[in-house]
Length: 309
Length: 248
Image (cartoon, rainbow over all chains, first blue to last red; front, side, top):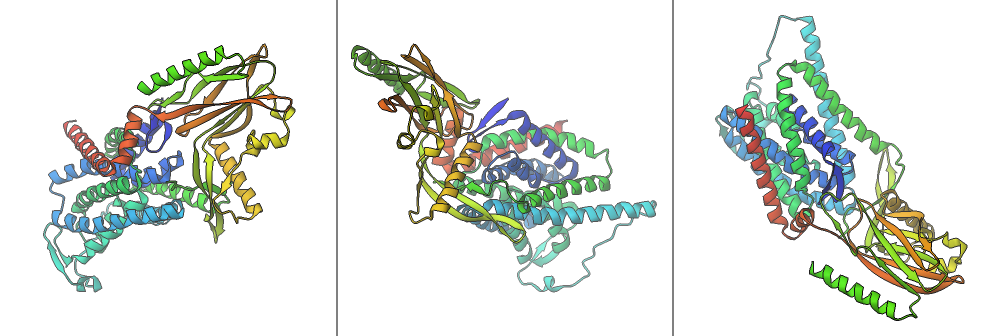
């Protein structure tokens, strides 16, 4: 069954879109990731213009983050203060990101920048994840009884602690410079706007390793700020570039909600490390495909420019 | 609806007046002057029919709305391929099709085909930069045609026009699912002795209708409000999904 997408200006198969939403939703339920970094390239693969894929995906992430954050909020796993500071940085970053997006679109380089950002980020994160989870599995094989949790104490004192504008984040048990979360939010905001992702896959490691936040509040707080940053991106993309397709977003949402249910149930029956190896392989697969497309000699070197006003 | 009715009246008047005037060598019309792209649109056929006052060859050229396009060429930068040069072209038809009762090359000269832009090779394309070198022009011209062919907006194939008793003719004009919107012109030529004996142009409007059109207009005319509504919709959907999760 075909449906016409009014903003993407193309006919797509409803079942295909629902299926894609379902698959990515399942993965996000399974692995606890947003899935934007998989959905945006997938949409581009099936022929949705990259600009529309990015704008629409931001809209979909608003929905998935809202449903995610509500669950975490109830368990008290959201550091509101930290979330708000991150959001301020994220707003500025996503504003700049959308402006940059618009400029790159006019220059005809937006596809290149989207692809390159994906190759770099998916490569780094997929590689790290693969390395980490494989080494955990190897370690478990060697010493099956010992389960060690390496405590990341606040003992180390680096240049980071010398920064001004210190703020107390009670829930995260931190006393650090506000510049740090502002900066993290800013960078992730730019990425969110250009790549059509929530940025959770960059945000979560940054919060753990750079800010030193306790793991249990990281996911909820990151989701909290992702809502606002992707909402801002959606608004700006809709206003500046007119690239948000609500019909497409709605279809992806429906598939995503159902998929996430299945994924969460499946995830409870599988081992964490094996799951992460699987996710790492998927991430690396997408990365390789995108890298291959950038490097291989194109069969058609010409293309129509995006900005025809 | 009003517009359609007035159009129908105009067409009926035109047909009846042409029938009374015996001297008109060519009359033609479409089964439908308005192609509506609805949410379930998967392409459509429009019947073109007409009559001539005697033997001759019929050639039909369908041209979509003229638009300015930018074409970019990828070049190698180190290991990766990226867009480099760009060329602008003016008034490029967004859609192009040819139909005839036999191959136009059998009964027309190249000069005539060029003048009436019959066949993709005779399509006139205007470059934004008049100083562009001939070689580059040729490459970009080929690229525009190739790109449009690959997305089915242009076709090299000459579609069949059926002639009946050398007087009546008809053909099906096909418009694919991704057809560009706008005002189309269907040009009908009657050829005798290698030259155009009579010609007629019938307009055809292809536009988005219904929910899809409303959404598109909304997104472009009231962009900020559209953005806010898109966010509200997403928040509601997310909240609803979570509520459903909690219950199960």
